[in-house]
Every structure is written in structure tokens, then in C-alpha cells.
Image 1: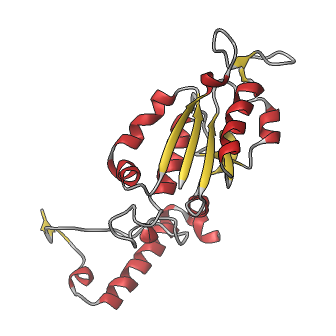
Image 2: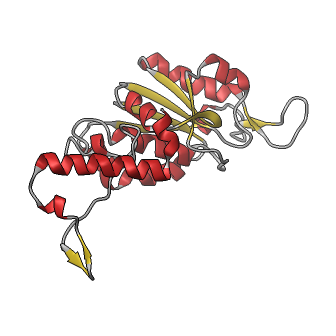
Length: 225
């Protein structure tokens, strides 16, 4: 998989990809991530990529031309499955979206900034708009990092245990059940006996029941789906 991220602040984005699972995935060549500084695509002497709104109003708007040049240059080199815009009014990211995107080959992610991008860019290029929650950040960079993490960890070979991602919360519209490790007894708090039984079927049944009860208590909305 190849991910191209278009941003005003590439330095803000690099750190998450230089550690842990994302770093290992890149080093193993399971994914390649490329950052594109939008200011490199403007002919303005001041490297401006934003301007005031038509019709007035507070906040600057990201201009069409630099974004058009960047996306067009990338699309001239290869085909892209999705051109994603990170925006608060996009579809809220969930596990289903991450699952589908993890199957793609080439993705462009455009990070919004200031008041957002000129609507014509959204009309011309964007195939999917994604939000990571009902709140506003200073830019789309942190949202892009969250999106990439949720996608990359699902690529076969990225996680040490291939089944790990399949048992995460939300994969079956259920929250994950309680989990335990050594010691068996910690300050009088004991690991449930069923997990020590070695009986695979009973353990799986217990986990399913616990996942259902936890979801019913904490996120009953998921059961409606």
C-alpha cells in the first residue's frame, strides 16, 4: 500500500510514523508513506496557500491551485483508489471504514487547515471525506495520522499475530471483552477461572458473553447496528 499525505505542516506528521507498529510496517515495506508540503506547489513568492473568503467571514481558505497541482502531479504517476479529505463534516471514522481502506492499494489524504479548502477542490477531486470525531482541530494532520494508524495495522503482516486485529473492539460491532495476564492473583483480585481452564470452547463462549455485556452497558448503540 502507498499513502500520500498532502499537508501544510509535514513536520507535524512525521513523528507518528517513526516509532512502533507504523515504523515497522514501513521498514518491512508493507506500506510506504509520503508527505507532500503544499507550499512546494505554489508560485507565490510568499509561498501562500490560503486567501480570504468570498462573501466575507472570519478565517482563511486553502486555495485551489496548489492543491490541484499536487493532486494532479500524483495522479499523473499512478492510479489512486481514494482521495480522502480530513474534515469535521466528513463521515465519522469507524472500524468498517478502516477495514475497507486497508484493502486499497494507493490512497491520497488531504489535510485541511485554516477554515478548510475551497469547495471546488472537494467537488473536483475528493472521493471520500472523513472526520475522527465531532470536534474541530487546528488542522487535519492529527486526524490523518489516526486514520493511517487504523488502516496500516490491518495490513497482513503488520501485526505479529495475524488474528489480533480481528479480535479488536468494533470488529463485530462489539467492544472487546476483559483481558488478563500474570499473576493470577494480584492483591486479592483473581483472574476468572474459565481463562485458566484450558477449555477453548468455554473460553470463547465466556469472551463472547463478556463482549456482549460490556457493549450493552457502555455502547448499546452498537447493538442496534
